[in-house]
Amino acid sequence: MDERNITFMFYGLAVAWGLLAVYAVLLGLRDRDLTKQLDTLKRMVEEKK
Amino acid sequence: MRRKIILALGVVALPLLLRNLYVIMFLVPDEMEQGPIYRIFYYHLPAFFTAALCYLTALVASVLYLAKKDQKYDAIAVSATETGLAFAAVNLITGMIWGRISWGIWWAWDPRLTWALICWLVYFGYLMLRSAIDDPTERAKNSAVLSIFASASVAVTWKAIEWWRTQHPGPVLSIRTGGVQKIDPAMEQMLYVNTVALLLLGLIFVLVRLRQEEVQREIDALRRYAHAMN
View 1 (cartoon, rainbow over the protein chains, first blue to last red):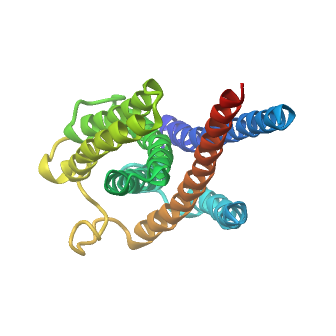
View 2: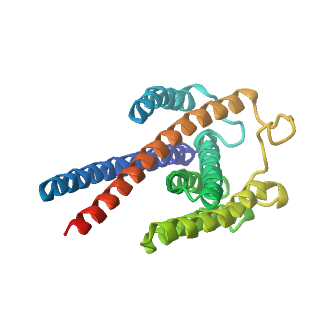
């Protein structure tokens, strides 16, 4: 079997998993950022009250 | 409650994805003509199905937004669209890698490939449009209209392999060939099993993204409140 065939199969599977993993990490980072923003704003509003 | 649902889905999806990866890499036999490269199909097709379902969800949510003017539907539409784009990217890039070996080229301006790319670009444009409009009501209304128009590109992409018989392989799944078996039943079954796994992952992404939209709206409301207090 052509070695490139197997190599490109690995590339394909790595890209599939890699892209979804990157999106999951981006979602996680955005989640952390939003939670931080929300906490800061809540504290700020409480202090103003 | 939603956090528990996301966790429960994750507990089901992750082992299933890992189990499928093991089966795809080590247990399923090579395809006679293509060799190992055909294994890419186990991600290429399910990723397309997941993206198409996400876009369909966005279409329904967009129609509901225009009918009911409820921001909840706008949040569902954007969450599903963004998730759909991630899966559509997997579909496009894995297809290119398969094409490099099977066709000897990374890309062909074949109708199916071209429409899949158009579809991706239109939905990417949807996200760009959203980031360009500040007013939430205007943003929701304009993006809902765009999402409805964009759904036509999904339908054309879906039907392209039947309408234009060119370079991209035609339908192989028995659900699209009227029961005619074009691939080994074991291969077809594995495709469905991995479709379920990717759909579960897609649902997790949509739910997480939906929660983020709700938090973002809460942040915006708090900002307005804080501004009014000054």
